Image: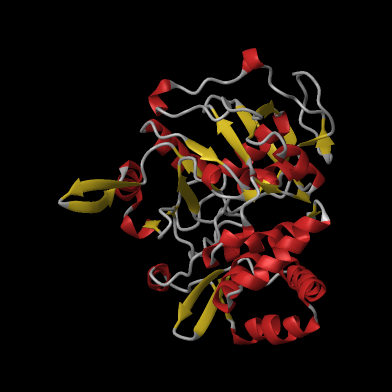
Length: 382
């Protein structure tokens, strides 16, 4: 954990500049604890009578009213989430919290979920923040035929931040901010915020460690929602298991990036829960393989960049090359070699590295806007 000293009206005190792990050792009753910087703190499962109530103005089903769901509270989790909310959003002079409050003021509940919460739980300090929204992102209107129009969230975003900073992809995921702005004035910034339709994660297979969400009541209380009852433990143990294991043969090419997320998690210390999980992941990466999608994955998750394709040329824009990036490159290459053999590494991954042009983020604002129109798809932030 990194610290720095700051001056306050009460004197000098240390301030954390990174997050801590909030994993838990064992099941206990609800108690009060202080934030600590160690790998796992005592678990605080919220009793039924103390479960939070979502205000009716959001008009949504309460996520924890389903079987197997568990709800926890933690001072360190609250600290980590507040740290994330204070981050400036790439391309905006606003923070993550500013955007969430704006949506909340318009009766739209933002529920951080997936990898965002997993990383906050294990102390990774996620900068790729995403979650679900209770209001419509798009609206389908029946006028002679089905026509798609802007939903409430898209309209609110455009009214506040402008169309260039409110982009919707083919999966109806809304991106708030500029994926390619450099924000050089800030040493740590959040990527453009990713907003998904409500209950997106419940309809798609994923890893149990990603089956997590956070409920922030906007008055200081933060709750961890374990949607399967297994996500917290698997995240803390850094184990890969699959939720509602799919018919693997039904997975499509669109699923390639999400299957590849297992490597992103392995770079953070995760390992397969059992041999069968690893075997199935390797088999279906082979079956679904796409060189172009591997370029997208490599740029985003290995180089921490934003990619764009210009004909046959692929450009990955990065903030700067770092020791962390180099370590990820080495570890990823080693994992692919172990899983697929040295021939795959030499013929595929080395070719990705050779063909990809790595450049710094935009030099001017105009460069930024042109990149927005050409940005390649990313895997779900969840």
